[in-house]
Image (cartoon, rainbow, N blue to C red):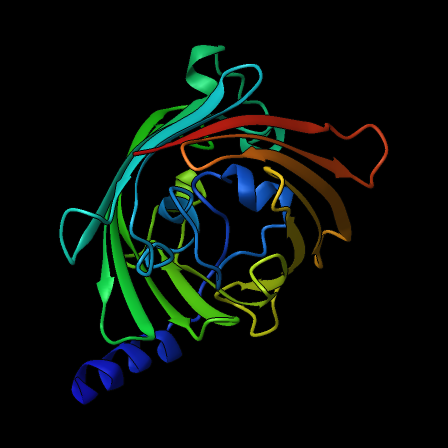
Length: 279
C-alpha cells in the first residue's frame, strides 16, 4: 500500500500540465468549475475519474445545452468494489477554436467523444480512478481528426473535508485539437452535508501559476431542492464568469438547471438542463 501511495504521489507531483476539459458537466458549470476535489456522481467522467470512489450508486445521467451540445452517461459503483462509468458527449466548437480563414460546415463544427472510467479505493480515505477516451471531430484547421488518450484521478475523503487532483491527456493529447496534458487540483469543505464550499485551480504546462481559478457553493435542502453558485476567473484572458444552478432532488430522480454568465459584453450565456436517475 505504501509503495502505491508513493508511486501515485510521484505521478501527481511531476506532471505540469495544461487545462481545458473535454466537456464541462452541469454541476461544474453551476459551481464555477471548482469540483476537482469533490465527490460526484456521473460528472466524475469529466471532472475527476476518482470522484465517485466513495459512492454506492447505480445512476443514469443526461444533460443538454442548446442547440446540440449534450452528454449521457451510466455510473455503477454498486456491483463490485471497482466502480465503472461510461459516457458519450457532443459539443459545438467555439468560434475562436478554428484558425483564421477556416470555415467548417455546420456538422463538422461538433466535437464528439466517448469515455470509459474505472474507480476504486486504495484505503478508507483515498480513492483513485482512470478514464480512457476517444474524441473525434474537426481540428483547428477544419479537418477531421481523432484523439485516443487517458485521464487519471485521485481523491481524499475526510468526511467534512475532501481534496483531489485530476490529470487529463496523460499521453500528450493532440495540439491540433487543442488537447494537451493538463491538471486540476481542488478541495471541498462541507457543513452537516447541507452547505459546502469548493475551490479549484487549473494550470498550464508552460507556467507554474494557475491560469484559471474557480469557487463554488452548494446548499442542499431537506425539502427536495438544492441551489448552487459559482465564480471563475481566466487570469491570462482577463475574463470572469458568474454561474448559478438549481435542482429538484429526490431519492430516485433529480432535475437540474445551470447557467453561466460571462462578465464580458456581447458574450454568450450558457444554459444547461440535466436529469439523473438512481436505481
